Length: 395
Ligand SMILES: Cc1ncc(COP(=O)(O)O)c(C=O)c1O
Image (cartoon, rainbow, N blue to C red; front, side, top):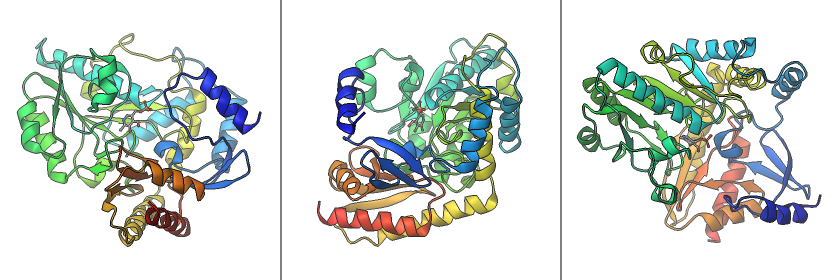
């Protein structure tokens, strides 16, 4: 099928939830994508912070093919070794005592909210301890619960009424959080580095203050690390840079190297309120995705890999700061999750960069989001920054 035919068929057959450029990708290799005309693109989007090891990583591809030929799915009614191998890795390398598997970031947050409701009711004996506190510019997903704690009106309003009981406070403003959190709060949910809301890292005081407020009010602290977790910031978990430990953490995007996965990591006290039948998922934690995720986890969880992410992220920010453009407001981020805020909408820049063979995406109207595969090197960073610099001059 020709590219033009695919684009036309997409317009006819798909629910129009995405506005896509007329590019059809056919394959990828490392940090490069290739389209149906054979054009090469440097990939600084990584499938929205997903392809941590890049495309078609040989070890990952071999293990996935081997596992696909052996066992792909059994449901959660039976045990499989890959699921337990992944669960053990996650628990032994985090604050968590147990994990719940699902299939996406939204589902991981949905589970976190459900666990919090049950935990709070059961541990406090108060039927009214059901409130959630979330923050301005947050993004936690599109399912009804995850959407209820997502801030942007544009995403929420068409689907109202959402799950009740959510109060929004201002991100990085402890006073505002303190006014919102009370005895009826069952959980506070926050991204240590906001992804969709414009790449905003939390301040250490903010996360430390939230921990304290949650402890004072017997509420759970949920860190949504769906976008910023698993090495993206140069730390295995983004919160490790802050020295603050949550009660619940959600993961998804990069964990299975491009296959769908979500995980809700919890402490023993939270896990113990859940019983067989309380929550579940048909596909979650299947042997194929879990084998794939073990490969990603083992590669990312090495001190030299994480150090390279920190160094390359610092280099990327430094190179962007050197760009001479009066349209740049700020460069910010953590590791290889970097935002370039402009005085103007970023859409024309994204299109111009793509024409020059660089794939980048936005985070809100005015922020360019740079989230390449974690295996990116300095030379490739130089290329990307040069293209961005040239495109900025022509804006
Ligand atoms: C921080 C965060 N949480 C949750 C989600 C939702 O994840 P998914 O699209 O896999 O449902 C996203 C997606 O961008 C995200 O960035």
